[in-house]
Length: 475
Image 1 (spheres, helix red, strand yellow):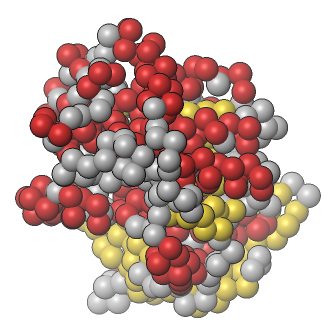
Image 2 (cartoon, rainbow, N blue to C red):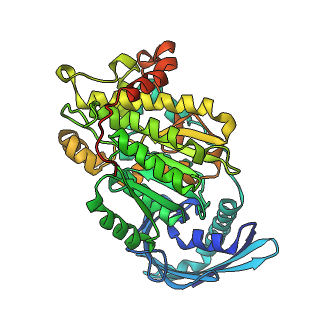
Image 3 (cartoon, helix red, strand yellow):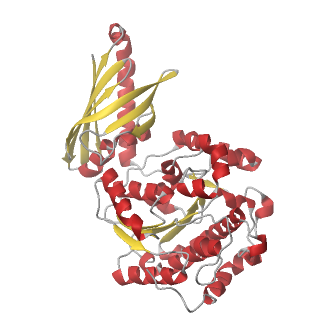
C-alpha cells in the first residue's frame, strides 16, 4: 500500500471548500491526471454519490469508479475509488482557521495483478502527483482566473470557417476542456431568472445553477410542465424552493405581465438568462399579429430585458445578462427590413438565424449602453446540442449529426460559466463558445452596415408599438 498525505490552507469558507470537493466532478479542474468526471448516480451530492473518472496514467487512460462512503458536512469526505489495477481511498478533512480553511488530503492506494511488487518504484511518482493535485486544489479555491482570451487554435479555425463550424460538435467541446479554469464560486443569495427552462439547454442550466445555490425563477410556457420541472430539479439537487412563472413569451402581453409581476416582487435580479426559443418550420402569426419567430426569438428578450432593467441596474453587485444565440447566425447579415419574413419566402432556419444575429447585435449595443450601470451583457452559442427542440424542428440534421451532437449539459456549460464564474463578471459585449470569446462574423459578408446596427432598437420599438391592442389574457 502507498499512503499519501498533503495539506493546504485556502482563504475560503469551510462550507465553500467542502461543497466544491464533495462534488467530485470538480476534480478535472484541479487534478491534472483527471481527464473526465461524470456523476453517475441520481440525487444531490451526499453519501452514496457515485462518479466515473477517466485518469491519465503515462501514455494511457484508466477509468475509476468512485463512491462517497462517508459524508459529514462541513468536516469530512471519504471517497473510495475502484479501478482495474488498483483501489484508492481518499479521506479529505476540512477545518476552519483564522486564515480560511485547512484541507488535509490522505490517499491509500492498494494495487492488484502483481503491481504491489512495484510500489517502491511507483511511490515517488505518486507522491509528486498528490502534491501537484493539492496545489491545483489550492489554486482553484484561492485565485480568480483572468478573463479568457480566444486560443490560437480557435482563432485559426474561425479564419478557415469550416474548422470553426466543426467546433460546434461534441469534439469541439472536448477540445476545450484542458484549457479551462476552475469555477469554485457559488450563487447563494443570488437571484437568477431563466427563460425557457422546461427542457433542453434551459433545464440543464437550471439544474446546474440550482446545484450552485442560486435563488431561481424559471419561466416556462406550459403549466402542465411545472410539476415535472420541479420534480426533476428536486431529484437531481434536493431542492424544490424554485419559483415558477408562466408566460408565453411569443406574446408581448405575456412579456408585459411577467415583467409586471417580477417588478412588483421587487427582488433584484443578479443574472437574467434569455434562453426561450423555438425553430418554427412553418410560417405563423401570433395572436397579436406578429410573425412568431421574430416575436419569440428577438422582440421578446429585447422587451423583457428592458422592462426588468430596474431590477438589474445599479446594484452593489455587478449583474449579468446572458443571451443564448445560435451558430446559425453566422450565415446571416443583419438587415432590419428582412427580420420579419413574409409567408411566400419564409424559411424557418433562416428566420431563426436572422433573429439570433440581431440578438447578438443587441447584446453588443446593451453592453455599451449599460457599461456604467454595473451590468455585463454577453451572448453565447451552445454549439450543436441534442435537445428536444432540435429533434422536433431539425430531424434530418439530427439524424445525420447525432453521433457528434453535444449533450444538453455540454451545450449549457458556457451559460452556467457566464452566470457563475468570477472572471465572467469582468467581461461584456462578447460572444462565447466553450468559454472562449469568438468572432461574431465567420464571413465578412455577414457584417452589417452601420446604419442597420444603429437603427435596430428603433426598429424593434416600432414593431412593438404595432402590436395589436386586443391581446389575449396574460398568464
